[in-house]
Length: 228
View 1 (cartoon, rainbow, N blue to C red):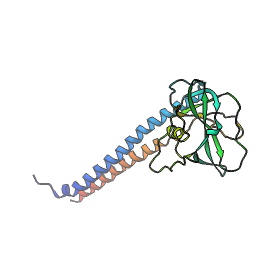
View 2 (view 1 turned 180 degrees about the horizontal axis):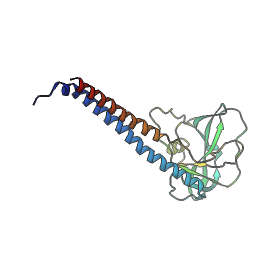
View 3 (view 1 turned 90 degrees about the vertical axis):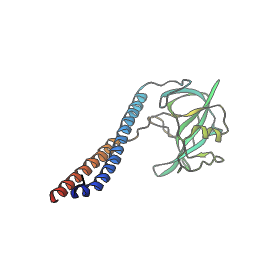
View 4 (view 1 turned 180 degrees about the vertical axis):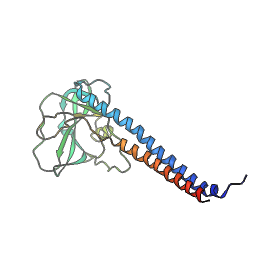
């Protein structure tokens, strides 16, 4: 049976609409998965922040709140990333913490200005500090190249930082110092990360566009067949 004229007129627009629907629904579903992942991650951050710190285990979990004891090595400090605070350009200060009978830990002591400002405070002797475990990140294709000679890094990659500082026995993560009451330089983290969770809005947007597209096509198809 040959295809009628209205059916032929609906064929290619219908195929194009189905393809666009597949893309929109796929994007909405992907954002739905991202929403579940981000919600669980934020809940994990909240639980870790409320829990008391535990002594640093041999294999800590990412974002776990822990305490560690050792001595800072100021002569091996490095700067990571660029961040503006109160119109002042600064970086995160990364310092190895030397422990007895255990690998060094790279400690993110907090934000320091790149020029001017008060001097960096260095505690003397052995210290016990509280913070959380940041597993680090890998550089993207758009990341700036590290200036190893100047000890300036633009990706929080603990392995790359350790190599740049010529350290061999170092844990493969960064310990982010937590000290909400500290005043002075460096400015340590006040809490665990609190990333935005906008994925529900994206889910509604993509699924909403899919429903709107389907509605437009059905209305057009109905008018087309009615006029035939």
